[in-house]
Image (tube, rainbow, N blue to C red; front, side, top):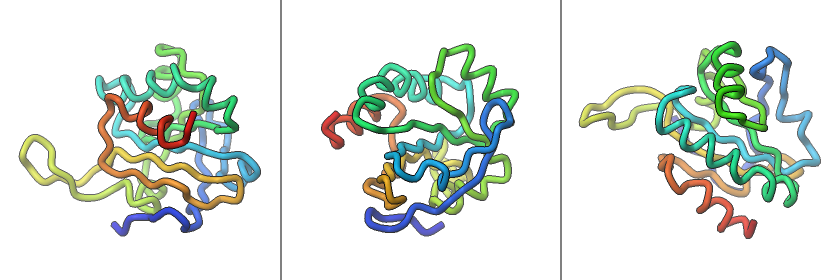
Length: 154
């Protein structure tokens, strides 16, 4: 999959959240958005990353950012994940990974020494006009949010 670069328009999407309510990127115009793509709800690495965003959501919100997580999980599992870990932001369901593909967050990767196709843990920062300011691929679950905050000066 081709990768996105800062300065490009963020691909629009319309997905459902953990409560099966529609969420479209175009509806968030006028807000800065951090969209993080993760492999699977309630797995150890994804929980670490999601909880790091949870623990940083107030300073991010104060700086004008809306955080959303995107995975292939169905809304019911996302709802359980959100409730279990008190995640204060929406989790979006992309079961056919079409939005993952549009963002370059789906493709070949190494997993335990084998090449597999799947989710490439990635984070995108989108400005108020829908333009990418950061496109980060193959990020680590641990420490990733602190690096984003540092890059954003938050």
